Length: 366
Ligand code: FNR
Image (cartoon, rainbow, N blue to C red; front, side, top):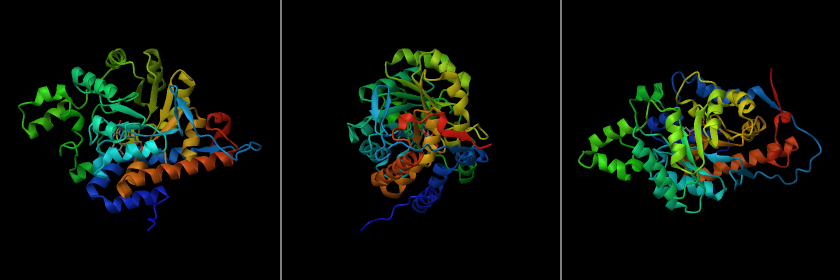
């Protein structure tokens, strides 16, 4: 039997909604505050118009990109999304195998359902990066990074937009908090440092402990500089939206940034990533790798980001909806569909190599 799999994002979202517990769906879908940023993330891409060129042979199109000397098969990665077992029992283990099939990196979240070691073992040859919520405890932060190095992760992505959890009205109305339910603890409970703190505590006390160490509200540039010294892996900072912060990242030897507003889940009324990109690019040029997420839904979205100077993008909710609908196969379908859309978009623009995109292919629609 061939299962019909949704192509349109709205249908993807609807089918995921039909399958998931309503509170879990709301947790995944919703944004911070009044969801102004969540909505703007999609609409702000439409302020740009692509300008096609005639004459190139587009019978084949190369999507491959070099990021830190490593080739990725197309300019996308799977964003760090916590607790993927909320969407499918195999969670991150399914998603990383899907990413590997398409030759794109998988970024494992600190609050993953499976530990970073289990995720690595599920698909040992997959390109994998580790996203760090810098804990409120330096020893634990270093332990996470060391474990990621030992398990073959190729980069560390430090997320900086989680000084506190966003004011998510849907979750508050539903009284739903996966953290309070003890989800996303695998990396903590499997950590020798964390274990030494909680050895004599009950399950309930352990959850409270995790919430205490979960994120360092006073995280600052000195911490990032210390982290720079602690690992030779490339470091990315995720959640940069201001050109000054991007410049500071360059100054302290950071390898890349992810321009992101966390999919509209944190600061509501935040600038969108695609609106932040041009000024950041102007400031830092090619001094570090620029990734971008929040609102990527289609081939034209990816082309817009790349034409404005991003090196690659991260997919968030689309692949999680695929995971909820059909596990690993669902993630593959989503990546496949967006890859086809990207290929056709490039062909129609007269671009046969994704590396040829630049600002001459784009105009602001004013
Ligand atoms: C996220 N995101 C996220 N980011 C991060 O750095 N660590 C994390 O654990 C999570 N967890 C998470 C859970 C869920 C359910 C969602 C939807 C998102 C943010 C994610 O990496 C990415 O920035 C956004 O998903 C991008 O926006 P779109 O494409 O989903 O709109």
